[in-house]
Image 1 (spheres, rainbow, N blue to C red):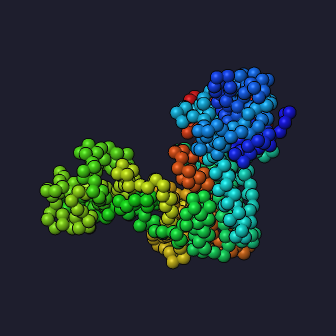
Image 2: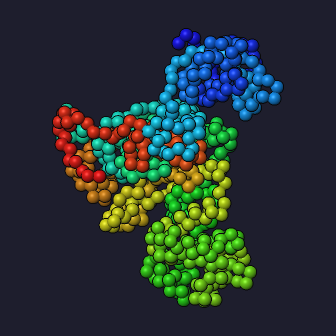
Image 3: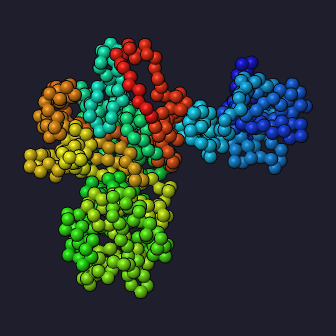
Length: 590
């Protein structure tokens, strides 16, 4: 480079008028205005209009005529105020322009496969293939800068609160944590494999046993699972663990973190403590363990009303151990057509519901094919319990409890959007607590709702021997706008209790020693009571920025099939490498 930049492309103002400056960056566009060339020069900090006037520099003007989009250049020139009426007040540098005296072309660019500054309608595959170009897009670049700032504030918050940042291993041992592991073969230990960590769970517990007391880490984690809009195979979590604490201490620490983030980035005071509900309440009233509280539409239990109903669909659901629940779509009678109501059934069938019943509360009374089956007393009880008024629409699902929860939960979210009940600018936080310790797998056997290191609530520990699925755990999730953004628990710190939980889960003594031997040993050497939480950083940034996909807040994300189109990973390796790793590959047809 002949000369180094003196300023960045987003900082010059009228105060700099008359100064000679050097700018470096990328050509965003090129315009010929009657023999005078105008170029928008762009870098990370912004955009500056530069002018190539043959009367100022004939040589620079001549060379500028060969410039095209995404060429990399440096220019030296004089800062001048823009002519009267030509200022662009939407641009930080919009009151000035730089008249170029010298031009240095640092690198020419091929014609880009898409306009990097207007890529909204470009095929995602193309954008991901040329991700290094896509990241020049101001929106994506600003997302990454915002993410960096959030990470910085988070790190400072924990350091200021006496937490120690510790990096834990990436090459570790496979442990059952709810998803498939990514495995890494060991060359020096033929036939054996490392696993990439699904979380630093066991290591952070080991750090508590080591006496670090307060640990945090912004950690990379890996899970080989099916992807969706808010999930990636490698992701980042803010990992936190604390000693000599209970649930309230962990929740208080995390709430104060989000209060700092809301103040710093949104200039809002987060009212603490955050709303809190039990898992049972969340599932009953919202059909989800991560409820969106930006709108109402609570689900109402009606099984007691219809247990002896003349409407067989409702009565039989209750008789067979299921339930009847409903939502009141307040004031929606004039907003929903008959087609809207009929379309609910195919929608709910995606969640295994057989159908969705409805009642429109019209001016002349309830309107529905099902009201003729109701007895007078049950109809009265129904309308009272649902707070039904003229103009409302009541929607019902009767089935097993799990089907009712899922289908009505999905319908609640659907109508929240359809009826424009959601304030998209709101950031609504809440906690869900008192999760069941165990769930049933497909065969009816117990499986941990969170992970096998979660402690039962002390008052429920005796139920481990008598009523397993009634045991509540000391677990808690934090929810933002209907998405779980973090989860944690108080851990088991007693060796005997940990062995007991493994036994309940069908993990025998030999298997426990093989998979968790070091933890079981460590728990015998003065393990303190401890607990923590992990926050999904990618998902938090996605929700803060209101992006449609988690890929928009990750610099180099994977596709739906967990591939990187830019680097063409995963890829094949040489036969010699495989032989070194004692691996034989079986070819599988796509």
